[in-house]
Image 1: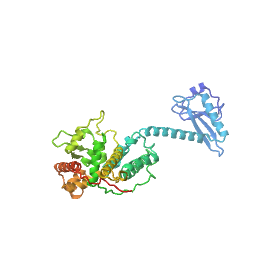
Image 2: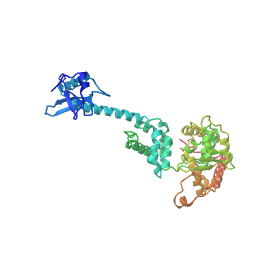
Image 3: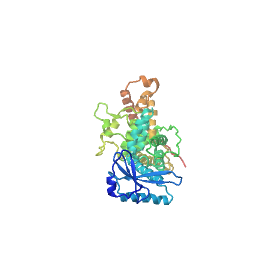
Image 4: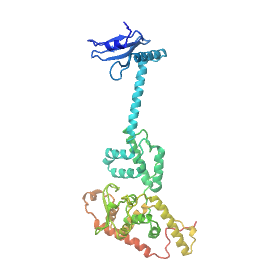
Length: 425
């Protein structure tokens, strides 16, 4: 039997052995629920058109989150209005609850994703996937280098246009590196999707670059012109390209060289490339020939940085040396009485210097195994298992021979040599 509930009546309602309800005579469907434990709450009961009786829990009548009798009547009245508009109160409450849960989940995910920047997610990817692969050190090297510009970006913020822009920039200086970056980047973001760190893969749908092995080796005449051009460059391009040529190491390795890696005071000065930056993941000791020691000894350290070439652009250095190469080639053409406007420079890349060193050293008497050690190439087969000789002295001799050869190129230049290539249009 419904009764006219009052605030006092709600307070005085006592617990019984079994749960019971008190219907409100003022607001149809509103009921005070009293549990055997003494807890009290409000609910709204109604009957659907199909005859099914439904209960909607409204709120506690006492304790945390409790609402008053007046508020309970208003809540029941709202439920009644929903029914009058064809809305089922129970279904509506479930929908509201689901929407709120989705909102909270979205906020929690957003808060988590704010921490999911590239620089924080990459180590997780390396540990979970890349480091277990034979190619793990190469994956780590490529992604760590090429994703530097994305370090502070969230992985789910990176768009396809960002990936295209990055791939185009890398392709301009190193097409093979661009192709590998595309493959590694696509797998990395696929992994991010599997971990629910991102929803889309920015590398999907990007154009593949055909990876064709290069075999460009500079002739002695071409190399002579390059050495002459390097001598005309400004700091730090001159020092960078001299060291790149003298050490025969990779472009990125020389570009990322740090002062703590260099020992100029030892009997045999060395540069020790740490395994984390080496392509094969193994530390590599490079004996420095006197010419390289002289260059490094004459360089001032940049305040606040351990880098030898801080904020340096190899692409800018390449463009600048190409300008100087053309200047010198035109000067030589004029000296010979040729038309300087018809001089052309054969296309080449900075990595060709390393290949040229590797090709020239055997001609100078350096055995191929030592050349491979100088280049820090991965040994294979039985030799990789049993060959533990450091080749320190052999490498020192090889780079000294190479350095002397470069020095002699410009001191024994013949006046009738045609540098690089001069062609009539």
